[in-house]
Length: 436
Image 1 (tube, helix red, strand yellow):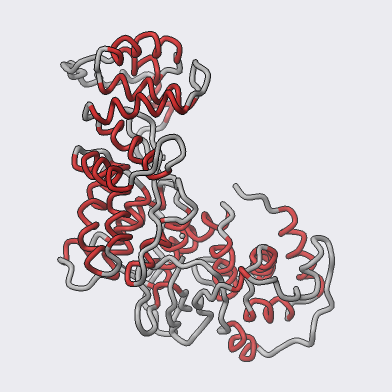
Image 2: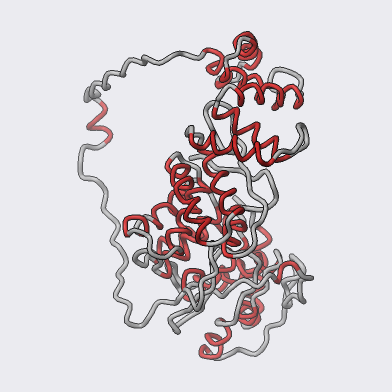
């Protein structure tokens, strides 16, 4: 699965969140030349009144971090516990907001949307845990050892043109790739020109020379190579190696997108949203997001999931696929998608509730270092959603997210209600944590 990386500092979530407001700079993606490889979040909501809810972000992390609860400031310190609170008082405290500066919504929905908060399991919740399937009762490994393997299907004969220069590039033989591609590039082969440009741009087998790379990208773009048009459009937008020319960049990006380049499709959609904030821009960009998502760009898949759950009057076949696109982006390793998917599964957004799956995705994002996921995961451990209750694990994830600057009054009250031994254990676990 491919990911689009950012050329500028603003991420995909930011530009799409501003779709109903003023336009903002566009996020651009990088990719290798021929095998096109392109190189966050939850919204406010409501709980069902039985447990903790995950409130809306407020941007607290941009300010100086407030005083830490006892035992959290120092990685190895301890704290003196306050007097124990009744379970009812603790539940009230856990409903307090958890400010953070991240948002995962393209649009800011009016009213309380439960997509960005975790709702506790209701008293009348009829969902049952899925039973794990038992082991296969077929042949054992020993039974199969002497059995002949089935015949492999015959390979289809490749009838296309073999590009030896790109083959050498893909195998890491960069000098060979340059030797094979340069004569073709000098003869006007646009695909070879893109390859030569990429070798100079990355310094693969040759000394890095971005001006030389820009020359060959321009030649490839003028020759109609989709990857060359995309890369030269990025140079025109950047305006460092070549003079900035937004009009020409837009033209080349659109041509590359219409020629099927998935990264260009994603970035041209970004341009449309930036140039036409609001529903009109999103609807114009949606076909390009869809084409890019189909080709495996995780940023586009995430964008589609958000658009399909926020734009009104979309065909049912599109809205039904919102969770599917979010799942594909999450599987690609996009931590923001993993965070949102976990919350969607816990809250039942765009599909049925699945506490266990929701816990697993939030745990995966938290293990990878996503601070908001660490905060939300603490609530799951407190309220036993998808996992047995574990105050020490809840304390651990609170400590980690708090150290990262995410303040949450509800979790802070919970932590202060732990015993000295539990606080020590939570801090010790947090000190041992390493993102993975």
